[in-house]
Length: 320
Image 1: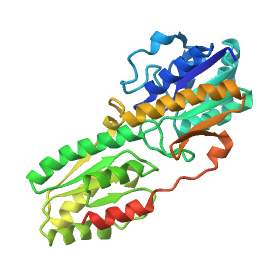
Image 2 (image 1 turned 180 degrees about the vertical axis):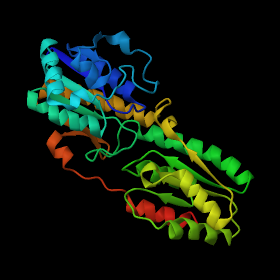
Image 3 (image 1 turned 90 degrees about the horizontal axis):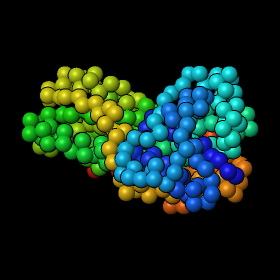
């Protein structure tokens, strides 16, 4: 093994830079050249690379985003685009490709395997929706960002005896919504994995708590459950409580990563390089019960990850 390629793909996540740093320094310490690929698979197709050294990753462990940048590429989704990227790997003498990204990036890696390129995938996504791993890089930071923002919204919500409907990221996964909702004491939490009745699970719960003397409310909604603006309008019409919607949006992707994300990213990046040194097998790096392990890409694609229903039950019971 002499050269590896390193790229970040899909949505950025806090901690990606910490993973980049770990990959680069582990590789160089073991005599491997690292080509950083700019702008994900799009950059790979056109050979947009830079050779990385120890100092190229100095002072990035605390930064959000990704210094290698990320871009989505429709061209790479085609057979022609994938072949172009594979030919570029061979031209650049890249023997293994380390990919930091989410579910879409890993699906692209699965398609890329047919061209004989070894791919080692590191899960970096705030949604925590990679089935084979307990935690993904960026998830902890995103949850803490939502908690901080929701706490600030709560201050004005309480001052004016309002209801705030806060929409968080999670088109298909409710992990951010559930955990941050518990953390801020939300009256109702709506997630894509659990079917809900808006009148029963939101309106009636609010009316019930009104009878106990509560005068302000926070509702956390994963974006996959509907529009916060429409929900706010319906709540105000049915309860008479002034209601505002807050869509946190891309603020959840940014910011300095937490300790947990920095450490997780460092461990996963180090593990990925050692896997490359010891095996030619493609894999997904994962955190399971505080250990860093790996799964075959096909195996990981067939795994499922369930929302913590006990935590959801707890939230329902203690947030009245």
